[in-house]
Amino acid sequence: FDSNNGTQFDGAGDSYNMGTDFIFTGGPYDGTGPHLYSLIFDKTGGRIYGYVDGILRGSGTYTDAMDTVDMKMFTNKGAARQPVGSVRECVLMLDVDDTSRQKAEGLLMHNHGLQGQLDAGHPHKINPPTK
Image 1 (cartoon, rainbow, N blue to C red):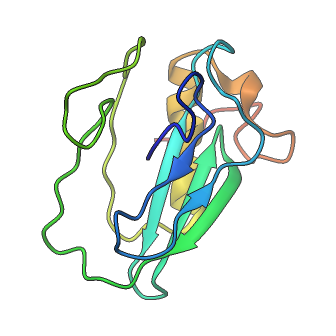
Image 2: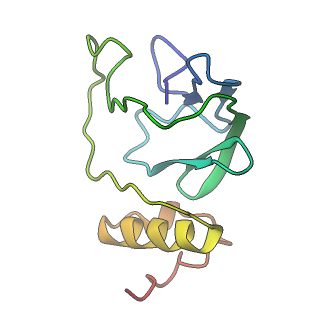
Image 3: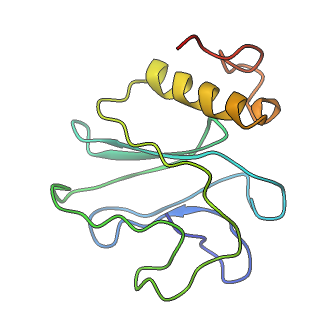
């Protein structure tokens, strides 16, 4: 998950030689308040999907197994540079279908008062999902 730009956060999925990279559409996302970023790895189909505020913004493929992968958040690959900002929550889920993803998005966005940023068609834009 990269910025794809040296001066602003546009958003990109960088496969680090595990598949194809992809650029998020709809950016830049910096300076516009907090956002919910989601990366979904479809191990069966070999695809990566990138969402911002519940809206699909990009996708790519991966070809290598992801059994042992280091995950770095809010830093570059070498952990030497960090952007200005913060991470409010990190949620890791297994076997995520669209319903589960949307429920998690709804809970997180309502918990942080950001539900107004969800797309009008999102099932949890108005009311949070039941727990």
